[in-house]
Length: 261
Image (cartoon, rainbow, N blue to C red; front, side, top):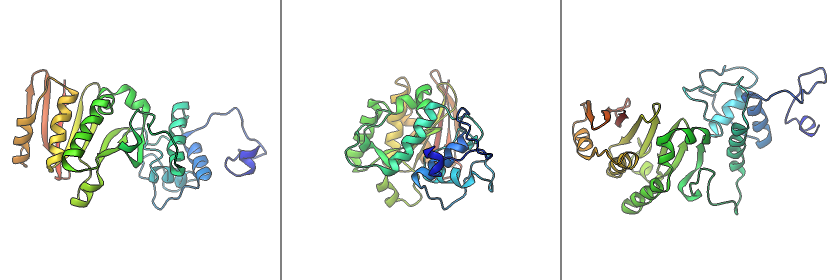
């Protein structure tokens, strides 16, 4: 078999290949690393991956190159069987490392290529089932990003849409070395989520408008203005049908707003 001859895929020993066996996530990691010659300089941070076993280097390479972002809670689940959707996603992310001109200008999620970072990663299975993520990649959300970029001369783009949704801007990084991105969203089950942002005028405006985009019946403009003026305060209150909690992020470099029902 070609894959075995080229060393891209090994058998089990005793001259057995196991053609009908399932493929695990750690096995796929090894195949992708060899196929695309992925380099790694760091050891994976996934909690369920041992730091010194046969697949450590391959899994580390996938994480470092943003080909795999795990299954949530900082887990990789190396022994878990790879689904067809996960295989397609891993392969797509790996192929982007060899990207050439002339490829489609629209990503699989419907986001224009011009609106994602070079190392953009995604998990379509999560986006499809998490309402706040689906809304956050909609045309309305994309147009909002374009408005903020034009108004403030920025280059905000989608960086990650998987377990967490992250936006990023290279221009903001240059202005503030501690900047991690203008906005991030972490789903908390159902329609509940936490949105985090930084002390930066574009980030604050984007957050205000993003919340109203997700929930047209919810406007937190005044509450956000109060929050950024009182950096050591935490607020818990109800507004309409929504339960709100807001305060400083754990690194004290920005704020978070939890919105629940």
